[in-house]
Length: 243
Image (tube, rainbow, N blue to C red; front, top):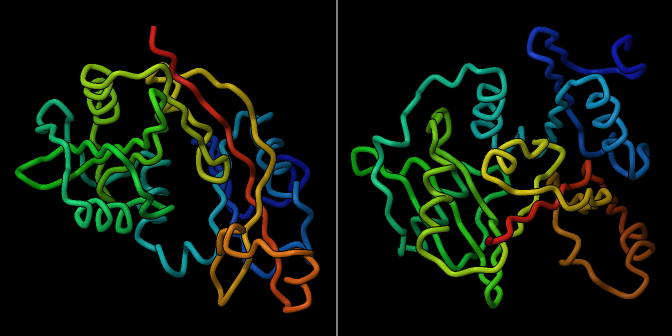
């Protein structure tokens, strides 16, 4: 409690990293206001501490992905591969993309127009995907195989996209619950704005996207069913402009 004036579940002073475990019920709108998680992240950031929020459903259902993220944050990833030793190829099998993202990305699969992968010994070890909108794109997923660090992988994948596709701009979003977006800055993105915390609904022990529950008098309707909101820490919007 002495570090930021509020309780931190785990604090590693030598790493300047802290972890919070957010139980869905106790961190829902019943007990926490919509800025609770964001404010805690901001207090840590002001002390040069990166705060990682681990939500209960991620721990229950994406346990290995969370463990891999933790190991990566503290520099203890057990397997390292250099991107220069990988073969770069576009992935056309959408089932392979879906399986890889669901197994290795905390937010799972999302539809995309372009899927670029790094392969090591013929195995997909890193993936970057883009969604097209006219001559603009969104970088909507990047991840590596869990428990692996592909050194220089993000740069290799992103540079391939720049060289092979026409675009005016690329946007992407960093979820402040998990990341401050450092990787975007290394790729040449500029921070555009910080977005307010967004909410999901807690249904059967899982966070569900709010778009699934768009009805008249949405909030009161959901509260009447004892279905509560839980908020994230906000997002940062980044943009890369083609010069």
